[in-house]
Amino acid sequence: MDNQRILILDFGGQYNQLIARRVRECSVYCEVKPHGMSIEDIRRFDPIGIIFTGGPQSVYAEGSPQVDPEVFELGVPILGICYGCQLMAHYLGGAVTAAQDDTAREYGKTPTFFDTECRLFAGLPEESVTWMSHGDYMAKVPESFKLVAHSAACPTVGICDEERSFYGVQFHPEVNHTEYGSKMLRNFLYGICGAKGDWTMGDYMRSSVESIRRKVGDGKVLLALSGGVDSSVAAALLSEAVGDQLTCIFVDHGLMRKDEGDEVEAAFKDRNINFVRVNAKDRFLGRLKGVTDPETKRKIIGEEFIRVFEDEGRKIGSVDYLVQGTIYPDVIESGTNVAAVIKSHHNVGGLPDCVDFREIIEPLRLLFKDEVRALGRELGLPEYLVMRQPFPGPGLAIRIIGEVTEERLSILREADFIFRDEIAKAKLEGTMSQYFAVLTDMRSVGVMGDGRTYDYTLALRSVTTSDFMTADWTRIPYDVLDKVSVRIVNEVKGINRIVYDISSKPPATIEWE
Image (cartoon, rainbow, N blue to C red):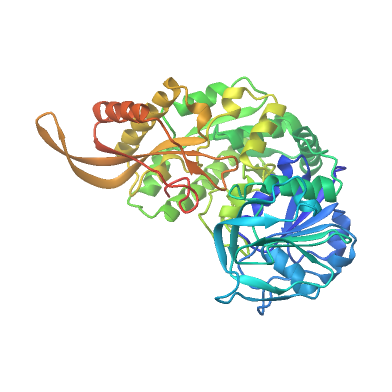
């Protein structure tokens, strides 16, 4: 790949992948690598700039993530964020301590003041809001650095050594709550690192196609096609790369939305792929009988997917590669060696030892959702498929709290269809990123006509987001919610109460399980 590169060294912070997302929004290629990356590998990566991420530990603590000190001798601009800022100070002659009562322990939105003569803050207002999340404090700034940002509580919010192009900020510019965070990152990329903005999705497509061809050679490839955006784009990409060497297996696990199985088959019947539809509803429901724990459900469904692929793979002969539509948020939410598991994903890790494939190919692993959509357009997929809202691999099973049964699936399927139908009628699809219904395990007394009911509570969920790492709940108009509620209660037997989820991410996740 001939594109300019930014190297992001990962110290375990919760927003690390957002940094990558923001860099790519600026048309600059980047990759997130472990903090322990060797100096030789860093040189081979040949970055035009390096970003140190945040992290949950203290730089002075035994066993905390560190970096090869030679990184400061490469002559490459460096931006340290939160832990990364403290790490820079720690290595270059400063001092970092735990914040005391009279110093700067800061969390959340914080008014911050900037020296706009510093290149990192060029073109910014002298005061704006940043997002803080730190309990440690730069008690001493390295001698070659000057202070370029402060808050009411903390004098060392921003530091810089303009001569060496080293910059550190105590806040998180990658988070939307930092008002001019994207501008700061753009200043670093273009004003300090000299980025040209040469990264496009067309580049990614071409390099991915070439890479896949080299890897696969004359081998056979098996792909799990769900009909969602991720698997559909992966199918189109692999089709472009290897043609009829690809077999796409659509596993209809009986956990799809209303009419979705038929829609998936219709969407791909005319494409240049080997399409196999497997009706496996009874098989999945049998494995899920009596299971209520959400993580157990996810694991069961993921394992059963693999078993189905094995069975179908044996029918078509030798299969060398299994393709999965894993994307970046899946990877980070499933945890790393320095980050906590938020939730497991059926297509990330945890594969049984007896998988009958030579290797797993994950061509979308470094892409965020909107980048996947952009790649789909580059590959010529129809817009209705590219813009299909996310649907989890385990399907409606994770939107049913408690046991998954055919009866409860039927209830949720009809209610979810009504919700989506009314959103479409109100022409609101473009105002929200993901919206769906959740069947809770809570039952309550209701009155319908002259009779008493004791039925389920249904939760409606809608979020708006640019990256699916953070999300805000959608302000759906009351009249639309009213229509949805009236229709569901009247048309779907088994529901007598509707609630609307007004939780953002964080603290909640987008899905309920």
